[in-house]
Length: 321
View 1 (cartoon, rainbow, N blue to C red):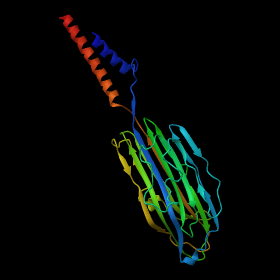
View 2: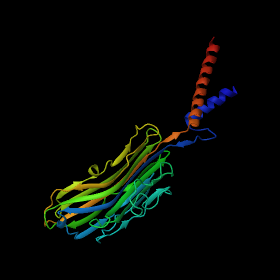
View 3: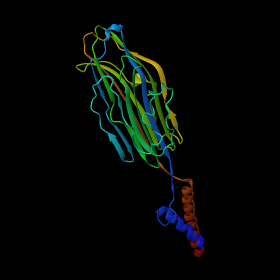
View 4: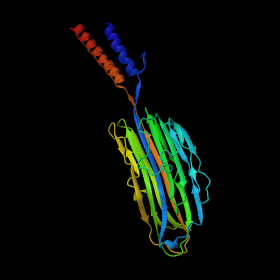
């Protein structure tokens, strides 16, 4: 009788959610996403070379960043436009959660020479976090080593958390110019793009992406040239949806030197605007998964409930006989 009462009480407690002296613990399934783009040695040249005489005006704007970890949020407002030649914009990383593995411009190679990979903290090397960062370390693109700019976003969560991070819209650099004669323009650059996503359990999601656009418009807004991330990068995103099997990870990172893209012929005497846009984003959702011990206890309780019912049915049948 003592055993029957214990098994029955255990099953009722598990199903009804009350009466257990030790509450079951939950495993922390982890989802991770990270995106970063760093462009180095960005230079403009003209053919014929004498057609381009430099830039007349400049405009550089940091458009703001946002982070969100389970509704613990942070954001930075867009900066005022800087109109000084060679201006530098370098935001402090914006973070909520455990960002101990990240430092300012972690993804940037500008201070240490162009590198083939980014020193990115691996999945689960930190706790839960949402982080965003950006820089425009060199906006001189007509001479010298060339422009250097980039952005990173990272998100990681466990045990049912969600996390998202990124720039609120494209970071923007703009230069105005005219040509002394009809010419084509060629842009050259090196880049490192890191795109990582991983899920521990099916049902979790992880996605990350970067943006990179080179655009030329006239002073009245007519677009005469555009190349976006789909044209300029091998991959611009990585995505794991809720159907991804347990333990899935994906790496769409790439790096390349000596990239080039050339415009069609631009007319002399027209005022043009060269605009470069870039951004990054990362989003995850994680699951709260019962530990095997909890599932085992639930199974034992349900088995006990079944045995109790079976014995009662046997007792009823015996009494009727």
